[in-house]
Image 1 (cartoon, helix red, strand yellow):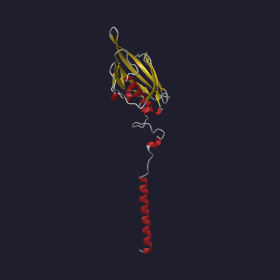
Image 2 (tube, rainbow, N blue to C red):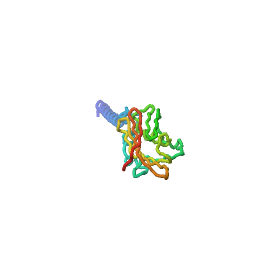
Image 3 (cartoon, rainbow, N blue to C red):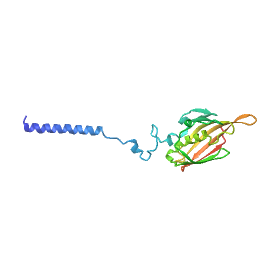
Image 4 (cartoon, rainbow, N blue to C red):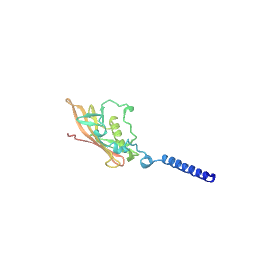
Length: 204
């Protein structure tokens, strides 16, 4: 074959092979959008395996959150006991990023307070905060002896940036004889970081 034809032909073949190789390399290494780019406004939120924010993933009853026990026929997602003259060690208390700016309690078991530097993105931390306040006995749960506490429902979607916790509590007391009483406790968190807790009659 004439060299004048062979060299240009070889050059064209080399160029075609090079173009194919470059194209294959580029297609193989295209970077896909990352989840952090899609969640640019939520960098401070941890998410579960389905990429739901905690406010969504941690809303529901014990059936959806995980049953840890029962009390008074209620299925509990959190369950613990608070007892007179028994102090829960610091390392066993629930951990929360919330700090209390103020807290007021009343003889009827009601309370209200304010969370310091509250961010609505972290409303789901209310569970740990209230559990901790009860275990520290800064919030009253019993009259004389002790109380068994069951968190059976929580909602961190309504109101937006706030939340609600629903507890069932059995407390033990002695007058002429020892007996058990029960009541409900509702805790409402407002989007500004203020919260209020109050007892309710518990009827099955």
